[in-house]
Each structure stands twice: as structure tokens, then as C-alpha cells.
Length: 177
Image (cartoon, rainbow, N blue to C red; front, side, top):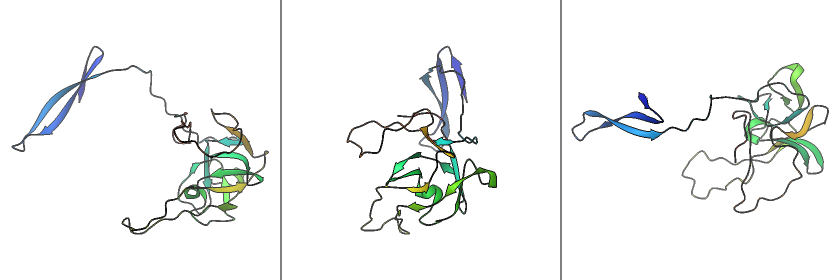
């Protein structure tokens, strides 16, 4: 529970005391007005499909984000995460945007970079993944090189230490830095 006092919000924090009894401690916080909450998820069907919108692959339990459509490894491809469309396999499976359905097909899962996982969280010598990547050979008729709210990438290069990144995904619907 909370109650307002002008631009200060007082939250009732419930804390156990030394004797086990719960006591209520009022905690004052500043209020920053930002406007109405707005949830924008990118689950709409869009053609050609840009990066950041929802993508779904046959034989996968959940949907995820279409990362980008770009020339990668010499071909125009849709790039997403291995855990979203491939799961270390799933080759040849249909790829859909925004969800499974014959009219939503945009390609097939054509390749992936393997992701290593360990059944034991205490693996003494784990190999850390540097990529979580899967791809589909794409066409500009079905996919766009634009990333929603970010524009068209200039290319691919290695990251630089200390560099800020900007990202957007189907679940957040807005750019974060």
C-alpha cells in the first residue's frame, strides 16, 4: 500500500522485527511524472518484416525477436537468436512473422552457430558462448533491412570496449541504451 503526499510517495514497507512481529515502516520516495504507461509490443504482421518484430519458428515452444535482415556471410539473411528459431537444430523448419500460420511464412531456418549448455551448473571448465545466432536466407520482398526505430545498419563489425549499444526487441517495443 502507498499514499501520496504532493510529489512524494510514501510506501509502507513490511519488516519483521527481532521478535518475529511484522512492523510497518513508511518509506518516502520522490515521484517523477512520466506520463501514462504505454506498452508497445511488436507482435503485428509487417511486410516486408523489419528487425525488432516478433518471429516464430516451427517446432519451437515460444516466439522471439527478429534481430536484423542484413548481408551476413555473403548472403542477405534474417538473423535471430539460436534459442529463438533453431535451438541447436531445427534446420529446414518454417519461419513465420509474427506467428505460426501458412500466410505468415517468411523463410526457413537455414543455419545456426551452436550454443553450448551444461546440465550441471557447476561444470568445472565451461566454454562461454560468444554468439547466440541462427539465420534464414531472406528476400527483400518478405524482410526489410530496417530495424524498427533504429534505421538501417551500416554493416557488421566487432564491438568496442566501453561502447554503448542501442537495442530493441519485440517484448519491449522501444529503444534502450
